[in-house]
Structure formats: structure tokens, C-alpha cells
Image (cartoon, rainbow, N blue to C red):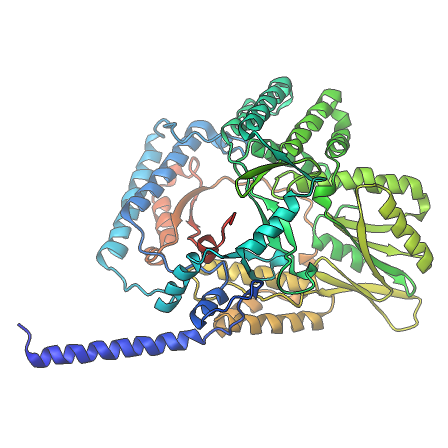
Length: 625
């Protein structure tokens, strides 16, 4: 029985703890500058909600400790994958393989089973020692006020949150404004047509799919590809159409909202066929010198080019490329690239691609619409199909028409193009008119200058003494003024490797996109300042910066022409939850693997892969409204 003095001391200590926690919460409130969100709906938020939105949609709150059944399930899936590999070899890892979760593989050879048994025992023992018995103190990375703000945001039904286009931050909109922007797309009768009987449309699409697979089964690479394609008949979730606000195209921050339409085509009848066609079409992109592979190819080509002082730098953008594509023409253009494989193979490509584009059906507010022109962004094969369509029907036709007048330097990445043009301004405008008049369904906007232009994420500019007849081309990083730079806060519950890889990739991008070291140092300074504002410690930033040297720029600009064989791996997939870092699973797997040298030739060295936990985006972002 506690004395009165002891109870009084306990109450005093409890008050002190609450006061310290309150002061700590107040301090945490002001650790990150309130960058906030693009408020397109004129909402008024309290401080807690602003702080929550300031963390960004990729922020992961601290999850609870890993349940015992979860670690058991991870181990069971790992053992099953190893047994499948022993039974079927690497053929079971084909990207077109239909998963059969109910299939039980045969037991592996005795040494492998011994290794799996020891590994399971070791992981479970470590789990009990680190999580069950030690029970480390749980510290949440969201304050109680922010958790309340999260619940309040989720229950605010007149508001919707979406990421902005071009990765410019997150946008908060009124639901009605958002719905109006989505309706503006599906009510365009030149692009969409209402679907009155959705079940009939599904049945017709499945019949078409079975017919295509039956007719061209002999041309498919393997039997399991047919099973993969036919699996689409069991995937009948009509994609939701949603938009990402295009802030850079809006004249004001607020309604009316201009958005990029995207269809979530992950479980639709055409999904697997689209994945197969994307893989097929991808092999043909290298046929055209006008198609850019990535920014590295562009930068390397520009820096090896010299121009005259009067050379024009021209950039153009195809307006609404995906909805503007002629479906039948696109399918025929892609098919003709496979002429060396025979007319029957060409027919397969044309009909399969037309099937995917013809059956782009989306749902908006419970109503269904078929896209009758072009294709939906979110369809796997559409980027490759659009690239090839423009290359064959647009650029190759222009080359034949213009002959020697076609620019020697013409590069395009999907709907964005860059041209070096020699001639007068009138001749340049005549070339632009030729671009605009080649295909009736393709319209472009353009900008040009003799000094510098913006293209993709770089600024291309001439460099050389004024008045010299020959000048070189250089690049520097281009960043949009509206970007909020909501990098993942360092307090987010991500694996430490995520922070390192993100910083490393961004620093390498700055090396590639800056021809002069001065511009690179400028971008590193800005990047460092932004990371400090997101809570990154100085020593972490310094360590990341020290690993990326501008002196290695030539290496980063090189494109490897050697295709490396994919090494087979076996991975233990575990959710990255509270207490998991203390388990040191990679070291445990390595030590257990080294104790069983007799399985090294059969089982690849196992790795630990961590599953992403739910971030704020998964709590706040909705497909429909």
C-alpha cells in the first residue's frame, strides 16, 4: 500500500512528464518550416493540420511492432520460393508467369531443407529476443495533435488531396471542383463515349481476348504467356479515372482546375495484354534516332555538338498526346515495325494493340465511359506505342517530305521535343508549321530562342565568347518555381537505405544535368539547405555528398551497351515495422547461409527486402471522390 507522500510524488512526476512531453511537442511543431500544400480550395487549416500536410504524402508514421503471424508468414513464403526454385529452376521467375498461390511445391533436397529449418529457427529466436522479450520503448513520430489532425482530414468529405503533376507537391481541393475537372474529360465526346451496359462490355472484351489468344497462340513465346494473357478475363475491376492537377498550366491557384487524366489500369481485362505488348514494343524504340532513351543520352549528345551563334534552339510539346492518337493508325504503325517476322506476326501486334486501346473503359462517379480516341495514361504499353506512332507516322513522314531541310539534331521524349535549327526565323516558323500540319490530330506548342530554352528538367544554353561563330552547348538543372520540395522528412519511418539512395540519385542527377561544376555546386548548396529544412542531420548530408563526385561525370554520362544477365536471388520479404531494425536480419541470414556451404550451388545468397508501410498518401489520397 503506497503512502500519501508516495502518491503525491507520483502525481507530481506525472505532471512533469506531461509538461516535458508538451514542450517537446511544441518544439517538434517548429522543427520543419511550414511549406504546406497547394491550397486550391481556399481551406483554412489549423497549425496541426498544416504541420501534418507539411510532412508530405510519402511520410510513413511509426507502425506497431511486427506481429508473430506476420514473421511466420514471411518465412513460409521464403521457404516456398526456395522450394519452387529447386523444383522448376529460374523458369518459375518469368515475368509472364501466372501466380498460383495454392500450389504446394515438392520438398527441396535434404541439405536445402536443413538450411531452411535452421534459418526459420534462427529468425524466430531473434524475433522473440528483440521484440517479444526486450519490448523496446515505442516512440511515435507523429505528435498526438497531428494524429488527431490526420483523423480529421480523413473525415472531411468536402475535401480531396492529390499529388500535383510534375512532382510539385500535394494539392488540396474541394471535392466538387475536383469532380468538375474530371467530368470535363469524360464529357468530351470526341474522346469518350458513355457505356450503358458495363457487364455486356466486359463480356465482349473477354470474348475478344480469348479469340486473340486462340488465333495467335502459336506465335507467343511460351505456353505460360497464353495463360498470363487469359488471366485478364478474371480481372474485371473497371479503372477509376483520376487527375493530377497541372499547376504549371493553371493561370491561378484555384478553380477551374486543369488536370492530367490517369486511369488506374492495374486489374482490368486488358492489363496483362498491355504488359505483354509493352515488352514487345520496347525492343523497337532503338530503331529511331529521334527517340530519346533518357536525359543522359540527351546531355551526352548536346555536349558533343557545336553550333553557330545564329542557330535556333527550339522546344515543342504535343498537346494532349495520348487522347489525340488515332487508335487504328497507331496499331498499324507499330505493327509494320515487325515486318521481318512475317505478316501473321504483324497482324498479331496490330490486333492486340488495337484491342488494348479499344477497350480503355473508365469509371467516374459510378458511370462508365469508353475512350474512343487515343489511350489512357496508366495503360502499360501506351508510352511505347505513342513513341513509335509519332516516330513512324509523324517524323519519318516529315523526313521524307523535307529531305535535307529536316534538322540534323531532332530529339523527342514522348511528347516533348528539342530541335537545333539552322536558318532564318521565317524558315524556323515554316518548319513549325510543317510540324503542326503533318497529322491533323497532332497539335504542338513551341518556344524558341538563340540563347537558351527549357527542355525536360534542364536548361539548354549556348556557351562561348560573344561574337564567336562557333559555340558549344551546355546544360544546367531546371527547377520549377511552384515546386514545394517536400522531400521525405528524416523523421519518417523509412529504412535508412531509402534516405541514402534518394540523396545519391538526386546528387547524380545534378552531376549529369550541369555542364559546369559551378552550377553543380550551386545545386548541391540548394539541395543541402532543403534537406536541412526537412530535418536531415548535417553528417548524413555530408556523407551522401562525399560519395558523389563531379569528377566522375564522364562515367555517369556513359550508356552501357552490355546487357548484364539477371542474377537470381532469394529474398525474405518482411514489413519494416517497429523493432525490426534491431533484429539485424541481413547479418542473421548471411551467417546462417555460410554455415551451410553445401547449398551454395543450389540456393542463391538470401537477401532481406523490406515492404513499404502505409504512408500519408495511402491514408489521405482517394481514387474517386
